[in-house]
Amino acid sequence: MLQDKGTPVYTIHAEVEGIVHQPLFEDLLVRARDAGITFCPLGETAAGIA
Image (cartoon, rainbow, N blue to C red; front, side, top):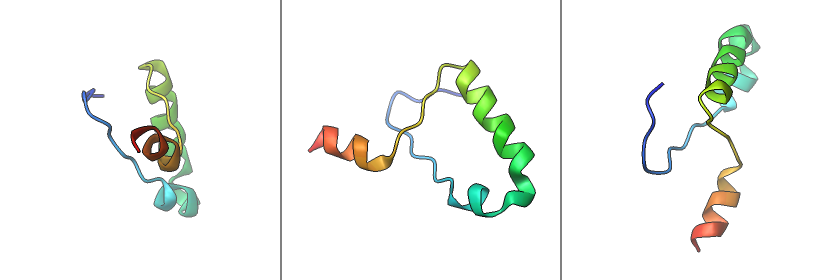
């Protein structure tokens, strides 16, 4: 995974709604965790900027 110095936004609605791809989504989450990447609701990030 590449790391960006900005604030990347990753929408997960398609992955959550399309359970057919659940194994791929779970792999993404494991790889992100292993790379030290954390996720939070966009509203939390926006509140910190305002």
